[in-house]
Amino acid sequence: MITMPESTSATGRTTRKWLLTQNSDLRRIGVFNWTLPAFVIELPDGSHFNVCPQAGVCAQLCYARVGTYRFKNVRAAHIRNLLLCRDTPEEFERQMTEELRHKRYTGKWIRVHDSGEFFSDDYLLTWMRIMRNSPGVRFYCYTKEISRFKRLVVNDAPDNFLWCYSLGGKEDHLIDLNTERHADVFPDVEALIAAEYTDQTESDLLSVLSESPLVGIPANRIPHLLKKQGRETFGSLQRARDEKLRAKNERAGQRFALAH
View 1 (spheres, rainbow, N blue to C red):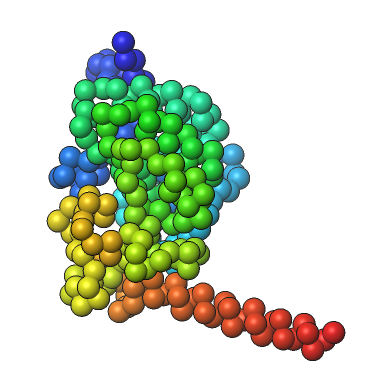
View 2 (tube, one colour):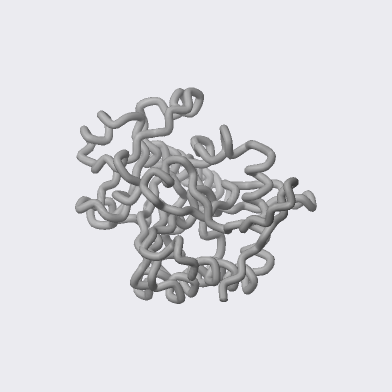
């Protein structure tokens, strides 16, 4: 028998509280999602935690740090999710595995993180166990945790799990852009087509199901973020940042050598 967390409304009716939800875009294609807060956040006890350790330029252009994601009730729910999977991982695994046995998920896709990341080895391994124990459900994700995935997932992936590396992070340089599936965020559809990337606008599942490993994502139409991004992609902005950092470190190394 499946038991789910419940809550009682003001009318006295008891309703299930699902761990997995659906935002408007994913609901349209029948995908459920698991959400955490994005990037560095302040927790209720005043401490701070980086949910996206390998975030690079994407941190300043992230749709999940603006708009509805900043609503008090939404943010509180995402923080509850984080505390559940970070602080009580065994309970999170139990609850999620149990929920995924429900008939509403049979044959469905789950997007792991429409916001947030696989912030630790243990957390990623927990999800891999959940996936293996949920054979009737399929899972996918975008991730900037390139080295973590290459260590833990690439050679030991659950059969029902697909992923797409995502540009704009500190580990972009670990991705083979010619052969490994990856996504880049472009200012518009025309730009991604010109770069010979596959447009995934029709369905987010194309990020892992398209024939081409080059996945193009048009930037969200958020005016101040579009202005900040300009005509660049997340990948090109990250490459420019990496080069600037490399040059800075090189100059610092030269000054150190001269001083000694």
